[in-house]
Length: 474
Image 1 (cartoon, rainbow, N blue to C red):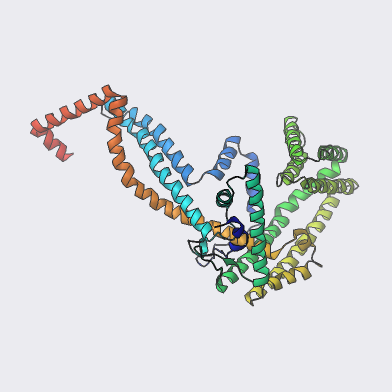
Image 2 (image 1 turned 180 degrees about the vertical axis):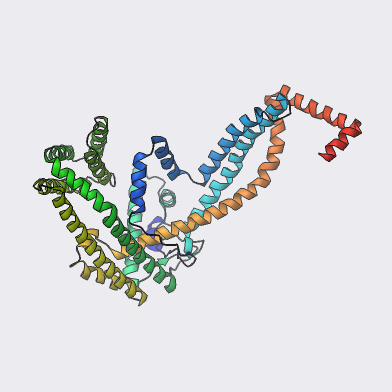
């Protein structure tokens, strides 16, 4: 397959539909789960934060390696120094060494089988060979595309490959969006067939509904967050601005100095340094928290234009400091914050009503193009939609990608279990063959002693009927 054909030929419909999705119970409360999590994380020790970060990259292969290392390093200690064991020290040592040998073989066999299996699944998904739920041809992954590019252009440098990759991905995305808007479907390739196949109408409609339902959920979550946590935090910050005008302004001026470099990478470094310095000096928590929020904005992209968003937030903060600094009591602060929060909730409610209209339109078989027209008309009078800048077709494309990934992850997990079970039939006999030979080669004295004791015990049992009876009873 030519890479050029990927740009226009490999746009296909993939929607991991939710027909088998169980309805989840909906527990709501005044406080938003994400905010509770973030607040708890603020008090967590560094070790816990590190483990949570590690969890993000731990997959099936990493789990196998970690479990095997744990078995190989920890289990031998308990076998060797087991105070309840009645066997002699040499026997316990001989048995303890079985664990690390078993761990090494487990890594070699299970990882050696799992990685090729996962790669095979990913390749088949990129080629459209696994069915619609797992079809990645509208948005092939980077690794697969790079293979195609290198195969077609073996003379390309690394930079040229990356450049070509970006072009192909952009073309794929544009064709997917074009199909959504003009054909009201997603076209995809099945098993290398020359002609594209459209997604079934039922599944496409289901994908559109899932997209709008996600938007509705986001708004409901934001409403809970705004009415609960945000109201409290906004009041705290506004009261801080009222009582610390000079200090707040000085800090905001310092942040604007950091932005002057115009280099987002340098700005992030300076902000990290600034935050560390503030914590060391035990400066006001409100200023530290605000600086961390500025950093989180800059951490979303390496585009230098991101600095403009950071500047806007600081500019708004300065206007708040000015306004709240003119107030004479906390009651005035609370009154203004409540007015602002209530206005935001009203905007959210209006947006939710519009999303319900969109959902009804999708149920009535309105096209993606017609839904986008609805958004274009509504955005003229809806301040919240203006802030969100929603492009419905792009949301649908993202939904397809997310659902496909979820289906593939499930496919690989189930397949991985099967692969692991199959490898047991290889690793167990292999361990029984390798282990005595390894011990004989590395610890000949220990190995010989073990076999000698086993032989002696067998002879004694065979020659003494009483020992035989005792063994049968036990």
